[in-house]
Image (cartoon, rainbow, N blue to C red; front, side, top):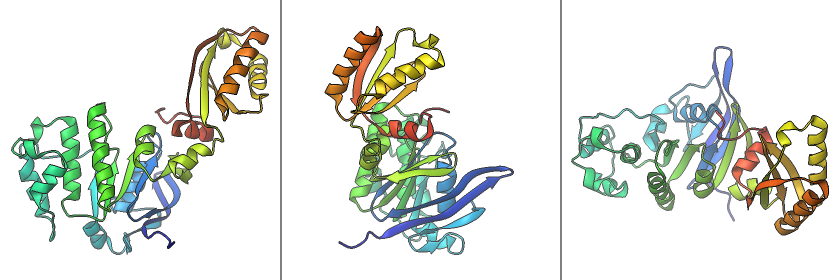
Length: 318
């Protein structure tokens, strides 16, 4: 089996703003035809990293290569093979949908047919509407249409579903998956773990301007060595001393099937590869220790758990 073709290479990218280093030597490769996710909380450096690869922001160190073109010396060629949906896109509110798409198409020597593109983005019925009358989801689909008008090899989507309702978000997910089916390489930044899990072939976890993990969603979750998580509260745990808290953790971790014990604010989380056994043991332990367990629930382990395990913080924390 031949090695996958590399479409993007980020090689030690660094970006500084005064004394603050926003991106700290980021390395990764993106393969042709995959959906590659940059996943991390706000401020992790996802957008700045993407902008350096797109040629919109000059790195202070390192460089990027896209489709064989170096962004430092061949930026014009890079721009011909990429499409970019920015996190915040300013559109011409008074233009009609088909007018703005045609205008963007005129910027390129080669462009795709407009009407099929509007069909793909579910905008055909809105083609004669002015941009200012579109919903949030429709504006995002229009922004993606503008990113695709030059038939790019690589499509950059920067948090495309932020602020959208669940239905609009799912519609955009379907669009991303169709892009993959057509052989496009998609780089997607997000702080939604479910979105990353559903869409991405591989995920680059970022925090504080650095890559902290890079693998498939399945392998990242497997790194916890746990299939399931048990969440619960203990009555009175807010008043535990450090010694009492440690005693609780030690008691919970004694079971060999329990791989890890976390506490997030008032909620305890047990990671286990034997859910039924751990539940029985937890109830027995609570009886033995006189604990009162509340809000007990089970779930599968997620990318959020991976991030918390590696950083001690939630993806959703600002």
